Amino acid sequence: VLCTSGDSVKVLAEERGALSQAKAFGFGSSAPCCLAHTPAEDAQDLVIGMASGEVLLANLQEQVEEGGKRLVGAVTFNKDATGDARCSSVGWSPTTNGLFVAGFSDGSIHLYQRPTKDNAPNNCRESSMFGRGGQQSKVGGTPT
Image (cartoon, rainbow, N blue to C red):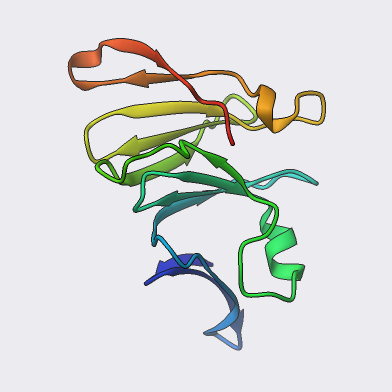
């Protein structure tokens, strides 16, 4: 079980019918608001939406195995967020492998694509942003 709590994400494990904390990792400068996970072998499978407006993409298995209390190996999308529009929801596409969306408090929705082995994070496809009224405009979706 995954959940956000304060400034951290907690991974809970079930033991004898009760949940116990197996792992927690924190973020320091911003709090996680939402998260989504999709099973993926050897790939980034955890999306975390932050109060700052940033969207983080990480490998859940790597986080669980890592001994530290900080997120490791994450790709950051929307790094230039001003904080005016926090990320309020994230979700994986059920039909297209590697696509995920993030919704923001200003009403916009960004579409992102998970980097593959063939395209480095700096070469990720541009995202689309849908604002109020369904108008589409291009925004930079390149992770930094």
